[in-house]
Length: 178
View 1 (cartoon, helix red, strand yellow):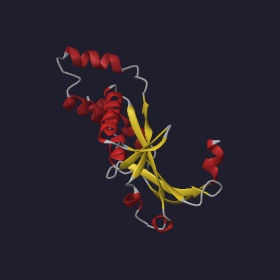
View 2 (spheres, one colour):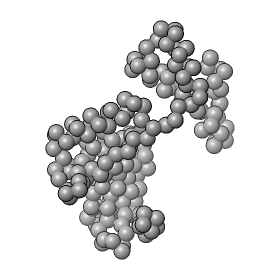
View 3 (tube, one colour):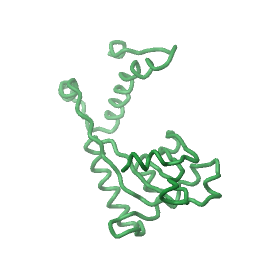
View 4 (cartoon, one colour):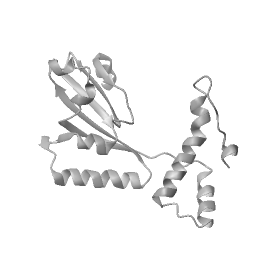
């Protein structure tokens, strides 16, 4: 069913993901389902949730209370603390005059929260040994600054793969960072 609906979705505009907004959005409609355009938003759960005024439940639309918002933040945070990547999802029905707006980011407010997903990446084979070495050196791997450094190091290790998609540029290999 998803594939059929997706194929019939006519996109009126898109906002690609950016680090400025921390979400992406598409506005469009499925003519067979509705005459109204719908804005679909996905991105960092805290950012998307912050733009929501209500949530969709089994009982329909309900206001997004401070208590519900806090519970969602706690649940999302719990997943993130377990090293899961998270994505939040929301939508909003738009008016035809809004759909014509070139500023899609400004439409991403007064949203309806749909939920979030937490994605657990498998641990690379070399990670447990690296964590043991770091701990033996007396470094607290739970320290936020250490985690940030490790994250930057991992990103640097992925540079050759990403740069391979482009022509030119500089490649830094792991051996050069050691």
